[in-house]
Length: 255
Image (cartoon, rainbow, N blue to C red; front, top):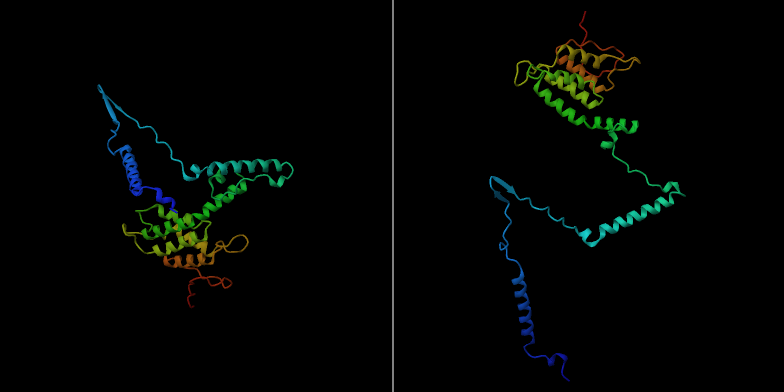
């Protein structure tokens, strides 16, 4: 018994190959050759007026999820679930949709009509996040000094010593200590030991509030303020016996 393939002519494979080659050549002949289609002119001259051609907007290309219909399917499913949830909310109020939880630094929390507590928290968070940037700026100002070249440095350091961030206050008194007696690179007088600065350092180091506690809550800021006072050449008053040792003190002269 002959096999089913024995009825085919012996040159069937060659014939199939020729057909495939012919189809390939026909397809290549129908493909446009690069550069055969002339480009539309970008401009034309009409008398003394030049007309510039504007290309039409390109057709947006569909992404793979859009091509497969997944985007539309997910939108339909989400809309259906939302409708079911809204209907069930009439009997089960706990199923009602809630607004999304925003970050504290979201611009929506800074608007005038925002909740007072939310707005206050957003402003406080934004102020706290500025602490590293403030410290970086103070360290740069300390490298320049408080001479006539940069007159705003003194006011900046005074404001920094009243900042709500402890790290900013510590950086400010540390900057005054570094700049004390050290002239800046572009002027002759770079010390930040002005009368206002020294007075502020004294308040930070030694003053108390109405309750009898330290005016400056941070111990390391008080200590650095005392060191800065000594670096500025100001006589450091001796601390009282009840005050903890937080920094350098001046020994009493022997009588």
